[in-house]
Image 1 (tube, helix red, strand yellow):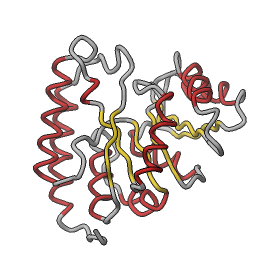
Image 2: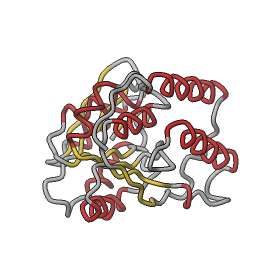
Image 3: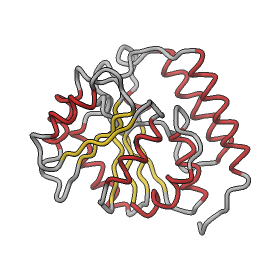
Image 4: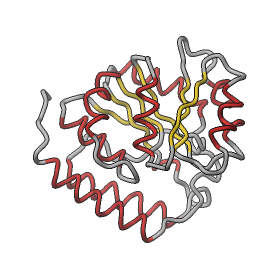
Length: 233
């Protein structure tokens, strides 16, 4: 669970996640504080003390979501690894069914697909349009087997992450895209499953700087991908 500047809500979100996953055998929850300056890590550590299966890692300064997930992955031990954004825009109660979907399909990677739940009135119109445009562009450039890459709920077989996660060069907004492109290029199987957004999720806007960085990084991933070795399909 990557977390940044979530001090007011991180304790409640950890408790809620631990409760939602209580019935999953062998579950471990690792929260990584991505260089927050608002006391997020201290709040997370306080909450983690109340759960035997929750641990907290982190660093300073802020490095980006990709760095946080790499740090948490390094501290993990499970053969199936789930990414879940710590703001809980994607409610943790759907994780057990998500894991069962991966088990029954047998895929190496299962990616959450949220566009169906991006309903008018629950998700800003501009964000819906930008999400669809980004999906269209990435589909044309990379020919991926999934339409969405940015959703904050994904599950992986450990082998797929061990091979690709340490190779990443982009750690911020387009981190997810580079990861999925690398995994696809390495020959691992990828599928999508619908996920539900929390009411009021992602209500903030997108800054011009964020759009610029995502466009720049998407182009860099596309150029670099031509030199990445291909694995078995």
